[in-house]
Length: 161
Image (tube, rainbow, N blue to C red):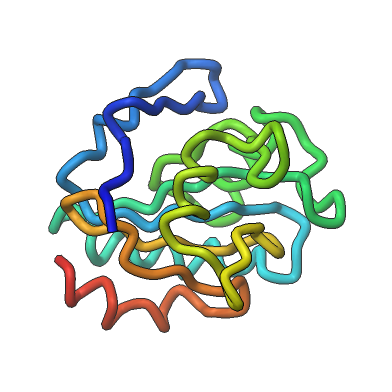
């Protein structure tokens, strides 16, 4: 395995500010492609609980809304941020909407899919709430399916904290 090139990547926040992902180097990260109108949307609550429980120990959920699956994230960045703040009191970093598959895929997701392919070696992300767990050295240690609830990740997170 090779470390993700976090120092070379950036992402836009819903307010338009570009954040260098190097700001998260040395932390344990859970990168998730999210959606506001998905059957898995209630996972926001579990992701927030992970953030609250492990954030003080150097852990961050990084959420990237995506509208590539069933048109389940049709809103603009501001409405998505408002939804996450008011419905789930999200305190973890939420970024602007991105693509995770295809030619327009955000570079972070391109790197994640290469580092940790899915079942049968396929790289494509199949649905909202696919989760990638990254250790402090930037290694992608695991990939979790959308149906895997955030609370099921506790043991894996604790192992690398």
